[in-house]
Amino acid sequence: MGALGAASIAASRSHGSGDGSPADTCHLLAQRLGDRLLQRERPPGHFFDTYANGGTLATGKWDIATFGNNYITPDDELTAVLQSDQVPSPTNLGFNLSGINDPVIDSDLALGRSTADADSRDAIYQSLAQHLADTTSVLPMYMIPQVALVNPALGNYMSHPLDIDTWNAADWFVK
Image 1 (cartoon, rainbow, N blue to C red):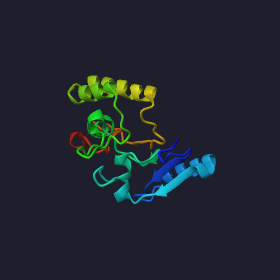
Image 2 (cartoon, rainbow, N blue to C red; image 1 turned 180 degrees about the horizontal axis):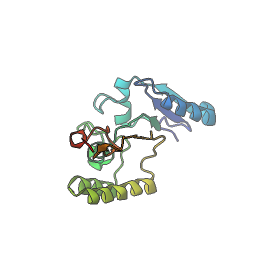
Image 3 (cartoon, helix red, strand yellow; image 1 turned 90 degrees about the horizontal axis):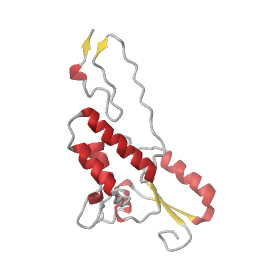
């Protein structure tokens, strides 16, 4: 049963910057579900609004919601979208819109935030990524590959998969 009480799926979408991927996803769903798919276009302000203001995502008034997020860092964004104490409510402005409540996720995020050693943090977040894949808590639809071509004369350049590649520019030097 869909959120509307019938054997249908309510798909809400929002277009912020002209990215066609949410529309493409809804188009594919429409092909497969036919008239059982109830599509609703929502303005970004309402789609991402708070629980108190009746925001589509925060109140959970959807069966399928697609939106893009291409800047995910474990400490900040993953905590906001996956940690159980970030589920939106009338008194919580959290952004865990799926309502995920998983003690393994909470534990890995807390441990990662409190670990200073880079190798240990990497191992913790790799474990979290494997858990997310195993439990299908999050289903990434598309990831943009990042390719960096760097002159070998540039020393101490390090690509960062989750940030802009000038994150350590202060440490660069010419060999």
